[in-house]
Length: 175
Ligand SMILES: Cc1cc2nc3c(=O)[nH]c(=O)nc-3n(C[C@H](O)[C@H](O)[C@H](O)COP(=O)(O)O)c2cc1C
Image 1 (cartoon, rainbow, N blue to C red):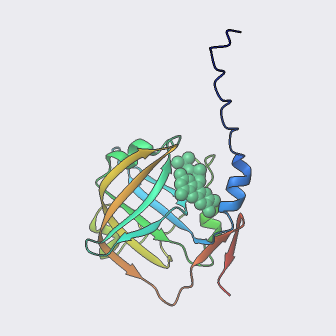
Image 2 (cartoon, protein in one colour; image 1 turned 90 degrees about the horizontal axis):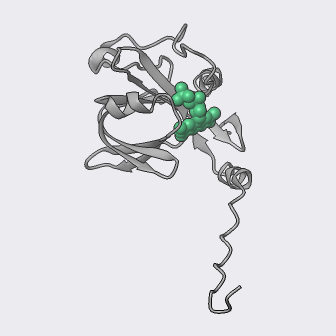
Image 3 (cartoon, protein in one colour; image 1 turned 90 degrees about the vertical axis):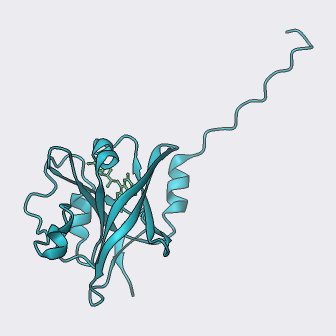
């Protein structure tokens, strides 16, 4: 090898994704189902724990969606989405909406059919602990996810329903 040609430093070893995932999983989160309506009118939704509040004035929140999701286009084109914060006993719904093998995740799922439920033509999951109906403000592709930022246009909470919690790869409850 030509002595003048310096060998490129070997690239950093790829991070151990599982170890990173486990470390991130130490942090407890609530559990949500984010829903919208596709251009064909079909209800779309998935289990999400990347949800966070972002700003109060204006009222903004965020969540991120894997770029591999078959629902990426639906969320990118939707005018509104809903963050349904799940109640403690809704772990079965969380598992259902995290299962890509279920073709119609909404089959048999009770949706709110009241004024808020009908107001923006987006599906609101019944029995949740809180609902945030958002106008899509931004969708930013970054890393292997797309970050969605929504402006809250309506919200409601059921303070008497404790939230579902996700920690260490399991669903749990507040003690
Ligand atoms: C507790 C929990 C939290 C999750 N959070 C997210 C998330 O924030 N973003 C995401 O893209 N997927 C998340 N997922 C994975 C999706 O729910 C899962 O991949 C789902 O099948 C995606 O639906 P789709 O394939 O219909 O898009 C989470 C799963 C679980 C169990």
